[in-house]
Length: 332
Image (cartoon, rainbow, N blue to C red; front, side, top):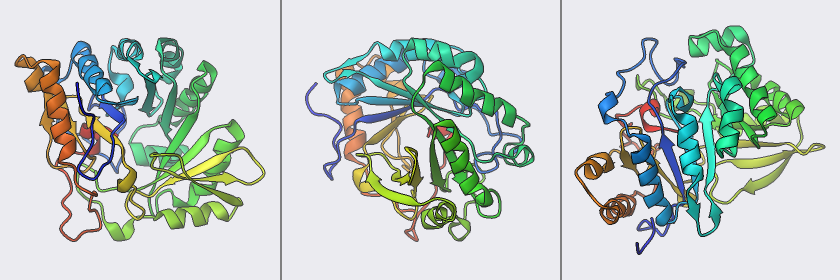
C-alpha cells in the first residue's frame, strides 16, 4: 500500500486507539448518567479477527502503537486473545507497541495473562484516594479493587504504570498533591487531565473547568517542579519532581491544545474510524469490510478519513458543538 496516514496539514498518524467495548463497570459522573447509556448492539461490534485485520491495515499505513480502550476494555471476554493477536503484528521498526487504558477493576486476575500475551503498559484511571468520594464519582464502591489492580499491574511487570486523574472543580481538586505523592511513593507516573466536553449528558461548562495552570499550581504548593516539555507527540506536558526520579504530566486538552502535534486516529468498538476525538464524521469500516472490501479499499478509506482532519478540535471556538457520541462510545 502506498502512502501513509497523513492529513492536509502534514501530520503523520502513527498512534491507533482501539475501543474494545462501549460498556463499563463504573458510572463516572463526568462520563455517563447513573442508569448508563444505550449500549451498542452486539451484532455491530467488531470480532477479534475483524479488529486485528483493521489494525494490520493501519500498521501497513504507518501505525506503530496501539492503545486499547473502552468503555472498560477488560470487560471484553476475549481481551487476552485480542492482545495476543495484536502483539503478533510486526512493523518495520519492530513489534507493535501495545498499551491499555483501564479502571483496573479486573487487573488482579488479568494483569499477568495480559503481560504474557504481549501488553507492555497500562494507564489506570484514579480520580480520588478517598473511598467515599470514589463512590460519589463512580457510583460504585470499588476503590479497594482499583488499588489492588494498580498493585497487580506493578507485580506483573507492566511498565510504566501511569495514573490518570480527571480534575473537577469542587469535586477532587483538593487531592491533586495527594495523588502526586501517592504516585511517587509507588514508583508510578501521575497524569492530570483537563475536563473535556465528552459526557453523555452534555453538561460540561468551560467556566467550571480546572485548568492545567491551576493543576500545576496545586502540585507546586507541595513539590518543586522542573519542566521537561513534551515527549514527542504525547499529549502531556511533563515535569520532573525535583529530588526524585518521578514525573508528573498535565494534559491540557482545552487550554493548551496539542492538536498541532496530534498523531492519533481511533477505531470504535463498532468499526467506525475517527480522525479526532471531537470529530462529527466517521468512516464506516465495518460495513465496508463485511461487504467484501479488500485491504486496499480499507486503506483508502482510512487515508481519506485522515485527509479530512481539521486543524484543531475547536473547543474554545464559539461555534463548537460537542460530538454526539460520548467518550465511552468513542474510546479514549
